[in-house]
Image (cartoon, rainbow, N blue to C red; front, side, top):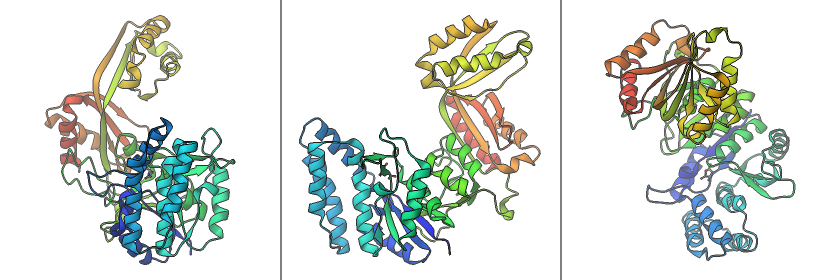
Length: 437
Ligand code: ASP
């Protein structure tokens, strides 16, 4: 039977009580053979994540200052888990090695990785699982580039030698043994790599929510959980700000066709959200899967008579943005007009240079910048076949008293994207969810 890889996030392993919940979850299914652990997260909203404390230790150590205050807080976090669970573990020995290294050669990624390292060792000891150090299997180049194929080969080999193991998330090492981390939240990525390497039948991602929500609960209270979503829909919604998983965690499992199940450690009976290539037949009828969006966009609008006759006009415009390092997000066009929607912050950093180049190279009749745009994505596979969804979205926005400033529909008919004034953003989302949620 193919195994299940279960990744437990920081809040799922924040204290001894959470460790007990994790044990119950692991014992409930013998398939949960490979576990990936995060560092202890916040126990309540006033608490600090161990990873943040470790970064603090590093920054103080690198400045040659005393780091005993955050270091002792870390000691206390782990000591409490060990005490409450009755584990035998040489915490002082492990911590003094880390402190030595911080003093002699403070490396930021090494410091940050120690939360996952220690927590995974404790979880392995608690469950009687082997400990498999990510430094031996997850490979980076010396300049910190992740090596996917080498990692997969090493990890597959290492996993094939152990029946049950806990792997620390978030980090790996280069060939010389220097530690490198993924970006924040990167234990999700380690979980996905382990799932691929183990040929898992399922990648479970245990966190503190019962799955992905239909929309932002700060805008629409109790929006409901998405029971099943495809990888492509997830990508669209995450891109627009609905975050449930680290972005890089999707690709390894998606390529291997392994479904991801987002689950809640505090409500283990909730089914959570299942992410896979296709929807089950019962859900394939659903038209809209979720609504997400964000503020902070601007649109560069260029107008030129007979633009449609000028071969390469759009390419030259996009090249100017690219040359200044501004990625473009959407690009709705008319016969003689083209708008490029960009992230306002990266555009504003080189705004006058970009506009000057557009004037010089493209000689537009009219050039303007629309500021203060919010973009909203209405996402769902079912929109491809359903008639009238766009009409319902636009009426919903009109009924909310909001003016639509831009419309874009992806060629896959997987989404409808509308641009509205930032001030209208919440109202528009509420209106769309009322009509289509
Ligand atoms: N502990 C790391 C962080 O706080 C990685 C993770 O939890 O996924 O970002």
